[in-house]
Length: 449
Image 1: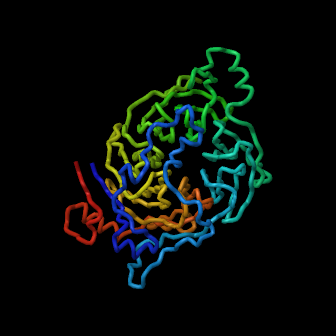
Image 2: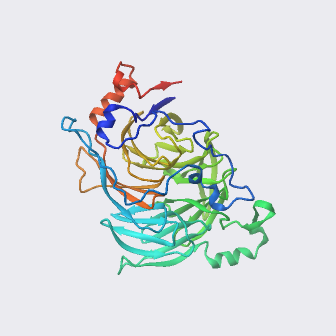
Image 3: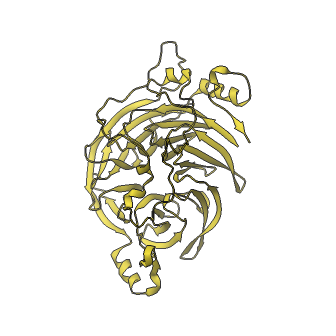
């Protein structure tokens, strides 16, 4: 197994990124330095939000979101062929912590613990629509429909008006009231939950933690702190299946290609499921457990071809698996964050990890090797969500650029420009991993065991 770390203290990176803090090159895992998140979601005395992995990481709300964010600073003698990754701008509304993001075609949706879902275009507020549920924990864009997952366990559906794109109207919720009424007639549709309480199987009985979409099949997946994930048919809003997936809260669900679905939980496991369809019936069959550890799994991401799976945990570590033929093989771990990884995103050859340590690390994958491309700093609170779009206006044949949106509990959204080009940094990383002497780069260990 390969262990790779991000060199926070390396002088080379300190020249490239002006605001890199003086942090250890390995993740902090001692219980004294980080509250290890044990299974706590079903403590009968807890509030629903108390189980959030974010709540277990220290963070600072006192800093103003208007504080100027650092830009990358390049010295005159610094190599010119390295990417100039940097901040484009910030979006701030003093109304709540940012919990969810979704971006498509230069339109950005932001969800917070206020009742408003805001729409942004060209870094200006374009529209807004209000939900009565408060905290918006997940957002998915599917054509003209917007799906939002909420703390109250409901998935709400919104529709963009074609004649007036800045107008969003409520189109219902999942499950629909008529489906709840029909299901409530049959006693067999009730399932037992905590403390001998029963509820309909088509309803989540705790907060929605994550949404994922299989666009090719028109299926929406919702994960919840009630330990289940549910499968919805988008065109008729029907719940097709509810899967009791884990022994604790499901923090993440990701739908990949070929009917493969990944779930990560506060119980420390990552599981793989395979969709099987028989006419109108859809079933997800358990395939394997990729990870079983003490620390809560807080985020999952899969690259577009479905060949690499990434997992972030409450100990600040990223694990990844690579597909070889039909099997997923553990490729190693990436260490760079001091606190919990709260969100992940994959775009092209880049992996973005946002953390409770307020930083975003940009990793670049080159075959089996991952290197720390850059560190995006400037948030004054934990980075809770990420969204990435290709910057088609700036990308060239040899250099692909991305626009990265990061939402934080400091009540701001920051917009970054990130390039995949990092020639010199890649060479140094490869030298160290091939076993050659390079004392200036010895903060990136490569350990196989």
